[in-house]
Amino acid sequence: MLTTQASISDCFTSSLMRRRPSPRIFSYIEEETIPLLQCRIMNMMMAAKTIDVPDTRETTDVGIGRDFEAEVIVFNCDCHTSQEVISLFCQIIPGMNPQKAFELAWQIDHHGSASVFQGDVKIANDIGNKLTRGGLRIEVRH
Image (cartoon, rainbow, N blue to C red; front, side):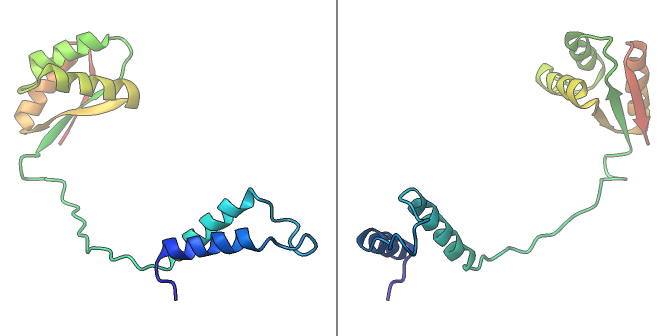
């Protein structure tokens, strides 16, 4: 009895190669279809195996009340260059660096908006006002 997939596949291939199908009965089987048949048989054998799925936990907490009181969202307006947006972010948003500012500017340009700050309501409002004075379209969500 064969127990491994490789040996079953080898046996199948060698039996097909040794015994050529009769042209009358299996005329539709050509040399090129043998690898396809092998692949289908291997897929059927793999599908028969069971896979252990670990338990997962889904968390739906968005952090309200824990360091997330408000967020500043910047929208794409097509009136500023990426460099202008990056410069504004680095000047106005605390802890912002050019690499993170570039990623946010790219996201705004390609997806239409990005959350650029999350934190205290007073700080979020201050950042929002400064970005608005810089000419950006923003929204402060509480």
